[in-house]
Length: 231
Image 1 (tube, rainbow, N blue to C red):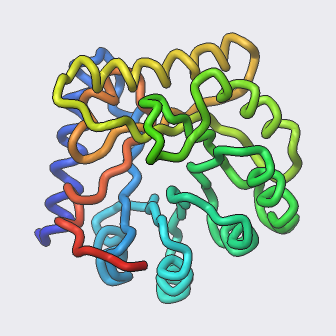
Image 2 (image 1 turned 180 degrees about the vertical axis):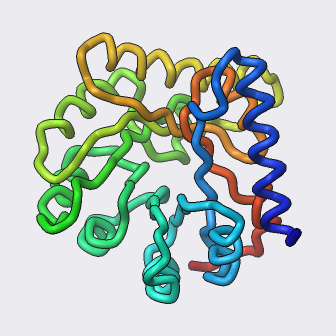
C-alpha cells in the first residue's frame, strides 16, 4: 500500500472512531481530500485508492490539474478565496464552492454557471472566530446571506463552512465548531434546505465531527506536508 492510500485509510479510521464517540453513523461524514499544491499524480493515486472528492484553492494550478485529469470521475471543490474576475472558470469547472462570503460573488457565479451543467453547490463561509485575517461573514450575517443565495438560479446553497481560529484549548476549538452548528440548525429550523457543514481538518477532525461536521477537509494527513507555495 502506498503512502497516500495509507493516509486515506488512516483518515477513514479516525472518522469512524470520531463518529462512534459522537453516536453518529460513519456514513454521515464525507472526506474531502485537499489536493492544493500537490501534483495531478498525487490526485490520481488517491483516486486509485477510492477517493473521489478533491479540494483546490488556487485557480491557475487547479485548471492545469483538472485538464491533466480530464476523464476521471472526480468531484472538484473550490475552497479558497475567490477574486471577482475568476468566477467564470470556477463556475464552469467546479461542482462545489465553499467560500461564498458576499452576495455579489454568488451572483457572479450564478450568472456564469452554464445551463448545461447541474446547479453549482455552494457553502456560506462563516468567520466564527472573528479574525480580521480570515474571510467569511459574521455569524449573524450567515443566515440572511444563505437566504439570498438560495434565490439565485444555477446555484444550490448546501450549508456552511468555517476555518476556526487556532486554539490551544480544545473546548475553545469545539465552541467555534458548535457556533457553526447552531447557525446550521437555525437555518434548518427556518425551513432552509441545507445539509452540509464543512469543518474540520487533519488536526481537528475529531472535534468537528463531535460538533456535527458532515464534511471534513483533509490534506496533510493524506498527502503529507506541503511545500511553501507562491501560487
